Length: 348
Image (cartoon, rainbow, N blue to C red; front, side):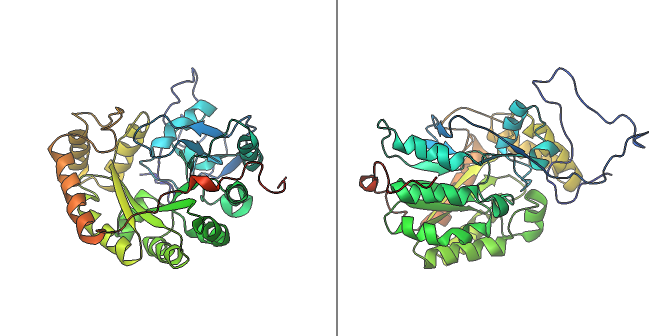
């Protein structure tokens, strides 16, 4: 069995928008020099605007900024994979190895904040892929975006799986002092072996918990998201994750159940049967039980929590653990009165 270590997806499913597909018909490759492992490529994207309006009632922010499209973290369950098809790529391996980056994102964000029509509102970094994925170490787009948030004192919400966020502790501390930032660490399990299979290029669980502690000690309010909860894989881990998060200083916690929209269903089933052949059917049927017999339900209000008995069990499990470990804790409300129209001096 061919298996690409360090990648979540193991195949490139067809792009739903493409009339033709490039495929490998012969295992020996004939005259082609086919690399043994997928290699990462970076592409520049020139955007006219960087803010995306968030219309979903399930998301507690008004706008999102995505400095990158595609993500090397390789989380096999990632709902954002389907967006890569709009670029002519596959939601599979392409999503992990063909990364679109937006170096003009900070300048475009500043232009939005300079508009007379702009009213201060929380902005999410990112709504689609991780703003602290590996390319950020070199590109520093997220750091430059944070400088804009500091300059204009506009609130920002960050969710990440990467401890690279600690590089920007100086900016986060500044924002936290003005009640302008919420940070969430995504932690799906405390089982490192499972983490390595589900999310092969993310920070270790130990590193994420250390990040929660470091941010908390610096005065930055931190929450933890257990997302996604997958029946038969990590659902039983939920109480332990909440306990560990609380012990490391987290003041909030949330969860969402797995939903396999579009091509993600094909990718996840392939991954599941290759990694867990002994329980693949049980897990697959457990996911269907969350969504009325399907592996995805895109309806607002239920898509993140699921429906039916399995969803109710997960909800109760979370409720009990949350009451035990997070009673009396909460993220501070954003202070929208601090916004500075015009900022100070131009950064660019």
